[in-house]
Length: 295
Image 1 (cartoon, rainbow, N blue to C red):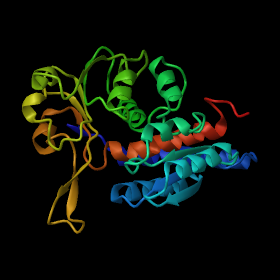
Image 2 (tube, rainbow, N blue to C red):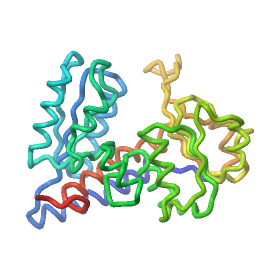
Image 3 (cartoon, rainbow, N blue to C red):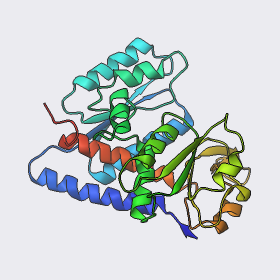
Image 4 (cartoon, rainbow, N blue to C red):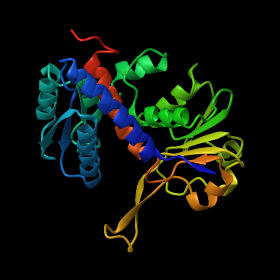
């Protein structure tokens, strides 16, 4: 069994990005600039945004964090997005989700200029991805594809089961895994809350991508020997032995499943670091005008 080390892979990619940024600055080009809007004080969001700011420093990016209270109106948030859309120094930006209930997440996503949508959530980027056109790929699915690529895990013709159909992970990663490229070219099945006999389906899979947010859902009886397991789940579960009072648990029963696998991602330290890394890659592409040429 090989443990897929997302942290080490992400550090390697960030070092590659940092080298490219220094070369750009050396040629007199501007430093890539990523902005983030954080609404409220959700603990998970605070941690995630802090990681993004740190990653910007590691990559040599300029970063801007815009904080808004959770009683901000939808109109005020949309106004802040308009300003970032118009700011020529900002190459890409994200609005950290989830948002307070009185704000429409879909309206916010669609308000972001798709040429600066480095999260890859805008319908233009999602649509381009679905037909194989260059775009900003959604960060977590892109990170998963990078891990499969860098670990040389064969995907062509393999049976891949995706557990979960969210717009952020399940749907886009299923699309990428069936595209005609490497990694990809897999035979993909998507299972969700209405799927019957899930264990029967997963036990035939060469690759399982678990992204449903149910701790320990994938058990040993659901996995065939030699399978590759990508665990996207990160649920906080109570743990009195930890200073924080909780620990992160994935969607896979790691201790019992890992001995069966050829490759598996841990939680934490697997997919998580790659998600932020993909955001950095998208910001670099935006700064260089690779996908959407600068006006």
